[in-house]
Amino acid sequence: MGCHRVLERIAAATGNLKAAPTKFQTVKDVPNAGVLCALPSLLENGIIKKIHNYFKLPDGYYSLIHIILFLGFMALARIKSIEQLRYSPPGEWGKLLGLDRIPEVKTIREKIKILSENGKVGLWAGELSKDWMKADPEEAGILYVDGHVHAYYGKKNKLPRRYVTRQRLCLRGLTDYWVNDQKGRPFFVISTPFTSGLLSMLKDEIIPRLKKEVPGQPCEEELKADKYKNRFVTIFDREGYSPAFIDSMWKDRIACQTYNKYPKADWSEKEFSEYEVTLVFGEKVKMKLAERGVYLGKKVWVREIRKLTEKKHQTSIISTDYKSDIADISSHMFARWSQENFFKYMLQNYNIDRFISYNKSTVDETKLLVNPAYRHIEGQIKSKASILGRTLAEFGELNLKEINSKDVSKYEKTMSELKEKIDYLKQDIERMKAERKKIPKHIKVMELPENEKFKVLAPTRQHFINTIKMIAYRAETSLAQVLKNIISRTDDARALLREIFTTEGDLLPNEEDGTLTVKLHHLTNQMSDMAVRELLNFLNDTETIYPGTNLRMVYKMVSN
Picture (spheres, rainbow, N blue to C red):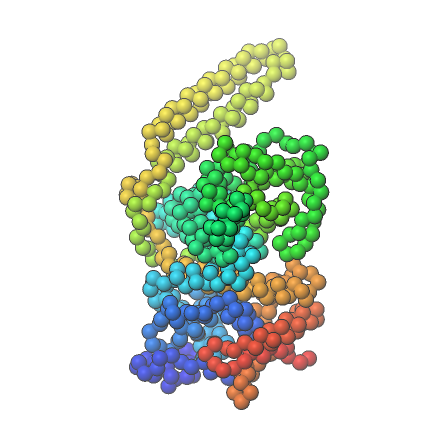
């Protein structure tokens, strides 16, 4: 359907065409033509950089560049799943790629399978991560690590359960551990079906990789010359709080920063002074801060910094970044919201919780994970302890003085019943704790009972699509930064970009001049049009060449 380059398709079908050439035609009113405005930023963020070193498609009508570019356009245009393409006009999308139409859903799935199962997705993603870090070494020196649970609601795979904070439930799924900079831009993600936790992932997977990839690290001589100098700073939430871990990281001169999980009594308000703190995007705010040195867990000396809020609440931060001043450390810690906003935005706009495939692959059976039997009894203990707490509170609230003398017998009966219930709950909890001691907390995958054994869901395909979405997000972020210098309401930058990406436009190729002009249609109001014109001028200065052609991109807005 919608194919008019018939001879080329026949040649591809008979094995006489390596890939269809990218050829644009003069067309008007193309839906989603505005997504071509993201092309310079997509290319700058490496969407097709070195892809021929890692991927190869069999000869056919669609080239590797066609597929990769289309996946990037699809993410930016908020087509959140491949199946959603069934309701999009394939010919209109084909015009944006210089083709007659895009592949069918089945074909795209086959292409993704070929690209992701060659064993090189991780190498490609790692190369991109290194390039992003090298492009901004200062940002790469302050790294944010957090886990995001990718819940699985199917019934054909018994993935281990884990706690999902946003839903307050223990659900089956995977955990994606993201590493971002303080502006929320992702560097890489590691997915795991195991429930070993953030500390284990930091020690075994993330920190070893960062040591190899973070640019600008001091050499051994520099570290010896300055005993307070660090390689880089890692920032994480309370799940990573561990004096032993923080101590071991500092022995390798890696600074850790997190919230204090067990802060002691409030400090005197006289200790707090007002500081001007520069936030991640340049905003300046006033904060009341104080600092002390603390010997944490009798293992490591850390800086404890507290922020005093207007409601007199004290937020406690601990850090082994001994070189930065108190305002910078506070700015770095409170920039964790950028990673939280990243998760929220990616969920809403890029559908990062969607599994690309439910095909299963084997897992390493020697890996450790939380014993389901241990988790079950742990849950029972917590449930009983909660009931005990409420019962003790009820017992303590009874007051003989408030009860009429005629109701003494009723009071005594109630007290007796509550006392009996409390004694029973305590005995039950002690019995379950004794049982828990006999159950190993962690077991190997091979030791799981048959009804709990599981497999991973197409991890390389998920990694491939996640990498495409990371590139798209970084491209969008770059354009948003440009728009923030143009529009007065900076919070509207991403909303305006979403509108641009789905705006219709005209495509006007000119082979003689070597240009491909994209004429955007008007947006919803004059202010948006004015901002977009300035953005288009910026894009024209990049002099971007459309991949696979000699055509330079020219961006304009249609005349009134």
